[in-house]
Amino acid sequence: MKRSLNKDAMTPEKGEEDMTSALTVSICLPTCNRPELIVECLDSCLAQTYPHIEILVGDDSRDDVTQQLIATRYAHDARIRYVRHDPPLGQARNVASLFERAAGTLVMLIHDDDYLAPEGVARLAALWQIYPHLEVAFGDQHEVDASGHVDAQRSAALNAAFHRTRRAQGMQMLPGRTGLVQMFPNNGWMALATLVRCVGYREDAGACCDFVFGVELCLAASQVYYLHEYVSYYRKTPVSISQSTRVSPFAAAFTAYSFVLRLTLDASLETARGKALRRLAPIVVSLHAKHDAPLAALRVALDHPDAYAYGLNLRLYYHLALIARALLAVCVRQRPRAPRFP
Image 1 (tube, rainbow, N blue to C red):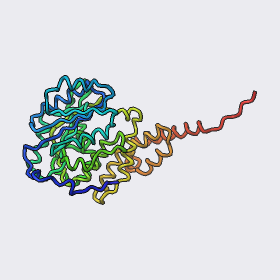
Image 2 (cartoon, rainbow, N blue to C red):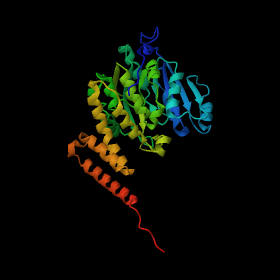
Image 3 (tube, helix red, strand yellow):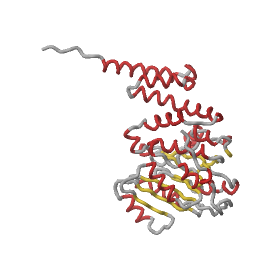
Image 4 (tube, rainbow, N blue to C red):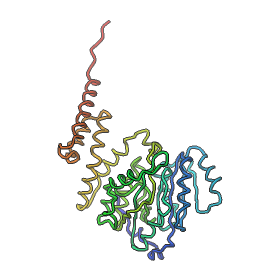
């Protein structure tokens, strides 16, 4: 359900209405046990061409390797404000704590295994000079493999898959749709700090907290701008998966589906909800079937026939086969065994 937000709390303070290049951007960087990756991320933040930045690091690591690395390598750079959490806060509370510590008018989020393009901050911050009442801005993401190689073709496909195309550039007519259809990226975005703090990161969303935050941020905003330029690098490797997701790798899809299904939305956003569910429903069907919940899988499939082009998509028949196999396995397990006699 969409949470009620106090619009007065999001009104810029005195002096913030004149959006100029002097606005400070707080780059929020949550990290956990990735000292081998955070250096590239931090160096990309420090290399920004936009001068008015602070870099907030929230460290959930179980050891002090990252702490020692930052103390040694970045000791003399006052732009970095580092805090280690003991005990760890978890992803959502870590990010929320960074938002609370942010002193800048604008906030940007970048995860520790990703990094920023040198002009990333400048490109997004410049939009506030053109649109003084802008609340949220985001751009494209490069896709990077484990070895650090950027694949231009895969990067273009990644953005196109999430509706980030040249045709879509500009102020979004339905900001809520931007979050629902996952056009809004998981990081590399920029937003007013007051709005970000009002929305917050939900701990109950678990591994899905990035998606839930993006949807709620876009629903709360009235001016969201998409810039068709690369501003960040998204690293696609096994270490991109959070620790909680490793334990239950499908929790995010289930949470996202349930969250979208239960949202209270204006009628203008029902089409966007349908598009979001068409993306999520087949994933949920497959996961239910593979985890011995065939009846739950069948219910979701029947609830969303449009996700399978009303029977014209071969994916439906593959999923029905998975459901049948799972149902048979359940029946075999539940069949009473014949008594053994000596």
